[in-house]
Image (tube, rainbow, N blue to C red):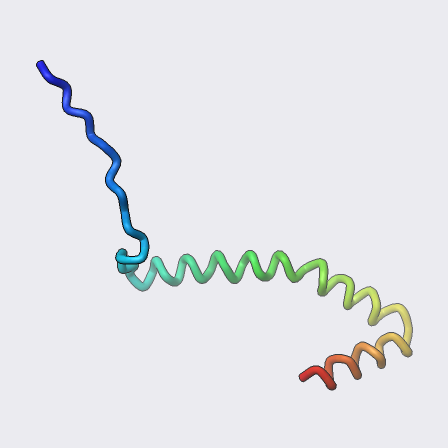
Length: 67
């Protein structure tokens, strides 16, 4: 008897159309990674803003001029 081997199928990911919950899941993961990566930057900003009034005002001017 011959054994039939099931070979893996090549999936072209650019042609697969994800349903809306799949897209929402991927976007949720991306936003979660972005928030985790932003934590050290935000903690550093908090540290500098609490260091003194002059550093707080310089950070405030930096953010007002860059926007």
